Length: 217
Image (cartoon, rainbow, N blue to C red; front, side, top):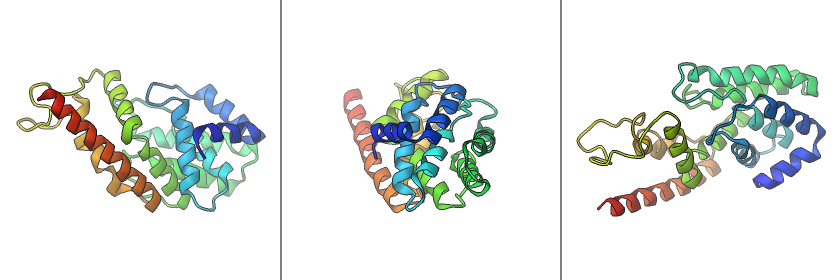
């Protein structure tokens, strides 16, 4: 299921159509957290969630970042809890039963990297892996740079791009974020298919860093 198919699936399902309209109304998008991000996370959540009903997986993905707190904001650590609270508010009126609503809410809470949580369900594991895939590969690189620009980071330290003689500081240099977090992400994946895709994308990022080194001499 690619993002186009996800959008078609949403359009063909009256419940998901109403949910998407509600998410779109509340969502404060930025370059790294746009609607395309939601569709791609939905696609991979469906792929990784096994026998879970696609409507449930897509609902979790659409709501996982509905409260979008900037990475450098003091409340960033509670963004997933606030998004889960929105899920508990909006899903029952759309016909989601109490058990499914709570399954989705727990998956949303657990997906957050900053919480360091181990997901409690197959849905949570799928959502966490799907969201982390968005931090890797070509799109992950674009999102990393966009996020750094948002809070004033440089692309890299021209004098010491690999932080040989200085501590890593990914608040000042976006390339540092590759080393503090992104390249380590595959070992945190919960699903075999998610980890395989993560390793493929990390290989792309290693190649990009090698090319950067060549351009810098």
